[in-house]
Length: 128
Image (tube, rainbow, N blue to C red; front, side):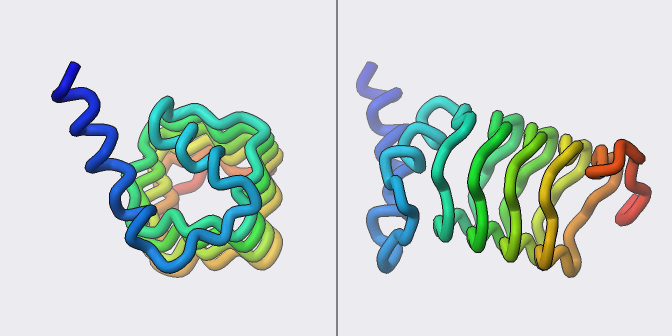
């Protein structure tokens, strides 16, 4: 049990040290990191830079203007998420579900989209 508490504490530590988290609902960040599931969450303008978010469920989540630079989002489910103006520069999006996702003005420079299911249902070969 102590090991689990220590692991969660170490996982959350970067967020407490970051200046300041600008998510409209910081409890959703905690939920995301503890459960790897945050459907319909409000993560607008959240600082999630360089995080391990593999296999997370972010369906229908508001990630507008979120900072996800360098994050590992492999096999994450982002269906119907709103990533308008989000920064995904250098993010790993291999095999990520982006079907019906809003990518308007999203920064995808240097992002690996290999095998990602794109908003139109096609499978990306970018980065393969």
